[in-house]
Image (cartoon, rainbow, N blue to C red):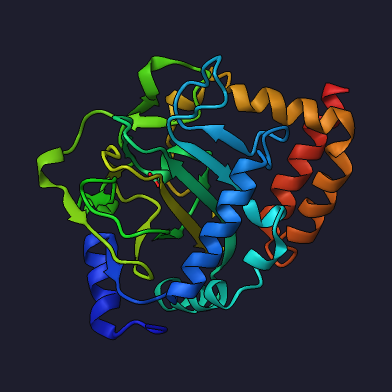
Length: 295
Ligand SMILES: O=C(O)CCC(=O)C(=O)O
């Protein structure tokens, strides 16, 4: 599957998500699994705060309940240059238009026999409310997924409403993960089991969840996010759950930038900068002004 039919595009915009078959080849998912396994085993990104637990990071950092490695393509260039990433981008362009570009990727790992769920959330709840994010997220399981090992579930049409109130998991301000507790009916969830090579795509505002992993094996997933150029939000809104957070991973981000990782970080920012978007220049100028003020 390399292109969406008109009917599939319409279904995506009606429901806020879609389930697609055979987007990746089995060999592509096996390669992804090998890469993800290696990066997670080597703790790639931990020092930079890119590898973290969605749940409160316990003293036993060896055993995250739901590990997320954000931007694995920073460590494994081939991920962004793959035929799969290009295929996904073509589909993203069908949904969002020709300006859709790569935003980020992530590996997720949920260990065997865990009750830990990926709580109900909207990806947009993690963002700055002053900025409008128009993004689509491709989620590829790296083994077949069902209710038993934590497949994705969605609330159809939830992307048409507002960003609902969220809070950090368990009310712990050091936790990366957010959960949405109200404003929807979890019983209405659409469960999306998938075979190897299949994926779901959801919009950044669509409510989603993945259940516990009751199987004997780890559950891996790889996600690819594409978005339109960012612009100022047309709504005046606040996401108070993002105020006063003290993410444990953020401490590592700051430490790593202070201790030598600043230049690679700056290099990446310069390379990934959206030069054609005047709004990004405004945001960049504000950020530099803030940095100068802090020194
Ligand atoms: O893999 C998971 O359990 C969660 C993935 C997710 O929430 C996402 O990709 O937005």
